[in-house]
Amino acid sequence: MGNRLSKIVTRTGDDGSTGLGDGTRTSKDSLRIQAIGDIDELNCVIGLVLTHELPSELVGPLQQIQQELFEVGGELSMPGYDLLKPERVAQLDEWAEQFNSRLPPLKDFVMPGGTPASAHCHLARAVCRRAERQLVTLSARETVREELRQYINRLSDLLFIMARLMMQHAEKNEKIWDSLDTFD
Image 1 (cartoon, rainbow, N blue to C red):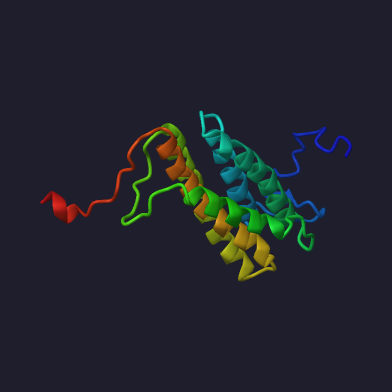
Image 2 (image 1 turned 90 degrees about the horizontal axis):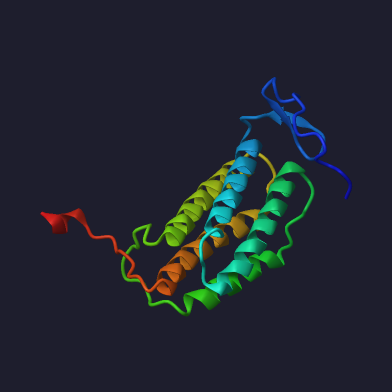
């Protein structure tokens, strides 16, 4: 693969532009760069989740998801290239079904938080939802493969399930949303 990142400081972005993977340049505030930034931030938050003691069955999937998020970012960086394999969406569905089957059914909304691991996983879910909104906005103006949107949509659901599983693993009760009307 070579030494692709041998020079980090290039000064080429001082004018407010940045280079895409295909060699073109675009404004740092373009929708495409905003989407790439949201995917990068999501990957960072998942990295934060991985710093916690987690149920062992979640570590491998989260590490794989980090790799796949690089594929999503790479594909966004190189319009016209397909990097994320469609079967990655199916894998997220399998994990969601597998992990959710271990949880009690929900009757109300879960408050984000709980343990540090669960709270960070909820943060990852929220960043993932923002990334999804950005992909939808971008896809209204430029070509974005449906698989990318599907992947990010499924991932946010999986992160929610994982946050719940982290609470179960810690033997903590989830806090459920309670209407403010009940506090009067």
